[in-house]
Length: 180
Image 1 (cartoon, helix red, strand yellow):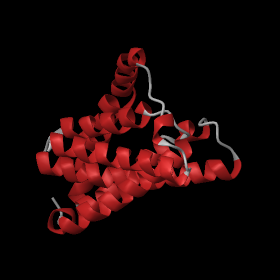
Image 2 (spheres, helix red, strand yellow; image 1 turned 90 degrees about the vertical axis):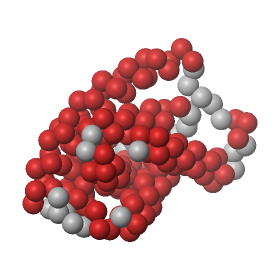
Image 3 (spheres, helix red, strand yellow; image 1 turned 180 degrees about the horizontal axis):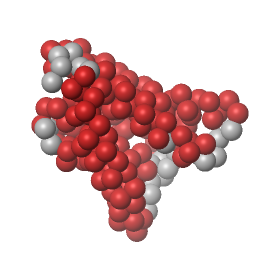
Image 4 (cartoon, helix red, strand yellow; image 1 turned 90 degrees about the horizontal axis):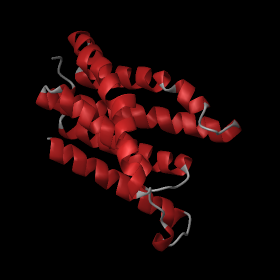
């Protein structure tokens, strides 16, 4: 499950990055990556600023409480919306304003809510909080490898997670629509 969740996230990010370059008529050889020297600091920051701490609350505590009352799909949606609003200060400080900020907020909310449904599936499948931390870490880290405008990348990533959450839900409807 750890390997498959990682590979699926890599596939989503690669697809989103390729979509960005194709939609903007930019050649792939103009792609810029983070420097080797910044990888370790980014890993440390991504582990400590979200994946380890947040997931103890979202999946370590809240999802278990919510799944006593709601089906996994609904519990994942609820966590996703709360999680999205949790990040509202970061979204406001994103540097976007006006209509771009609105697009950013919408894309982020769709993306994080969809990602929450996906994490809920993997968490329930394994019963292991480490899978949630693992997925959250890779989500944050993979978005920083290629240096591109975050708004279009977020729109493409969010679309990918929305599709992936839909597929996970459709193909695992017995697990996603039955109370734990």
